[in-house]
Amino acid sequence: MVFTPPLEDEEWPAGENDPHAWQAEVMDVVADRALAAGLIRVTEEAQPDGSVAYTTEVLDEEGLSALTAQVIAELAHGETPAALGLSRGGRYCAIMMDRMLNHGITDPEAAMDITPPYITPRSPLPDQTIFTRRPVISAEFEDPEPSSGLDICSLAVYVDGRALVVTVPEGSAVYVQTLPYDLSPGYHRIVIEISDLLGQRRRAEWRFLLAE
Image (tube, rainbow, N blue to C red):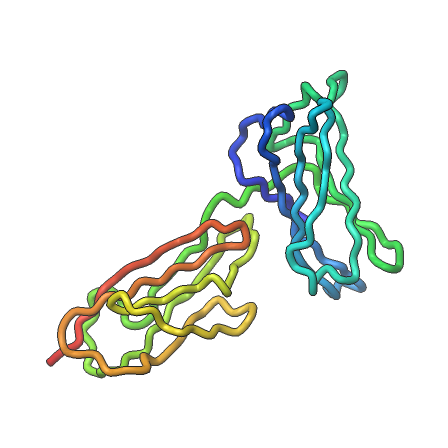
């Protein structure tokens, strides 16, 4: 499991009002085979009495239905909860337990996903001249490591400002669709947007030419 806090190597004082969240990918593995996978969010929030509360939220109910989560927080040596600062190397971990009581513990060293997915145009290519009125629109996506994963449901595609109805298989990193209507000759613009599971969004925009 890998924690992916959304901030850089700065400290997050426990006295701030806004809660801070980390996310961890979880897999239940038997004989090197992943049986369940999903995403949890661990949230730290300062309380009025100066203590700190920790909660977990299951973001992928299907993948984590067979797992239970218990959050453990280790205080820095000699510090009180009210004075505790949380950093990228903070001493925080999560314990996952499956129904057979097998335990898995996160590496307490945090890995940050602060980069939105990459979008690579495949068809038509930028500034390409094409000769069909119903071109194939295609692009490839990649969420660089450390990755929280692609949110394929967030995909949005526009041609000349007109939104397309898109369908992409779950787990796919490639979008392919034949335009369902005719284009007129001239330049046309494609806009594609997609997010990762942390909500970090990327937008790619390019044009192509339909010949007379």
